[in-house]
Image (cartoon, rainbow, N blue to C red):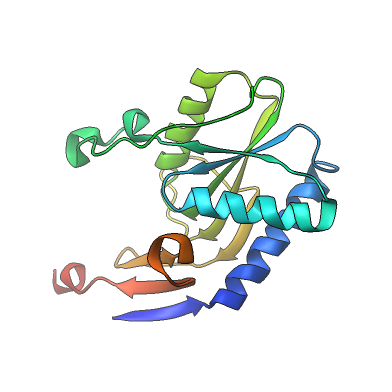
Length: 181
């Protein structure tokens, strides 16, 4: 069973708000680099870039990051297909804003920070997520959040993006298999 919790319009407003918050926290767009985490963080980073460009008139660099080799659960999941990491600018002494669709345990973000530090030494790393669902296993928090959605351990969050899924929406999904236990 699933329930839509964000429509396309809701997502657009959240991305616009996140973009404004990024500019406010960083006193503008100087020395910012957006880095989208594969897969859904990449189109979200591009949307934030376009939103910032709309009201600042500045083109911010967007990079793509694959964390497959940095995950701590590869023995359970396997490494899988590794997508390219592309960060077109030097990240040293810059503010890197990691962008992902959902923040859950924090393990993916920890892996992303390890990957970023292998590429250089940013001035700081900030985190922007469309949805924060709670249930952290390590002490990580987002700087910019589109929507807080408390979930149970029997629920999942699915972010659908036009660029990947053909539709913009966020749904909460109840896992019947886990409920049967």
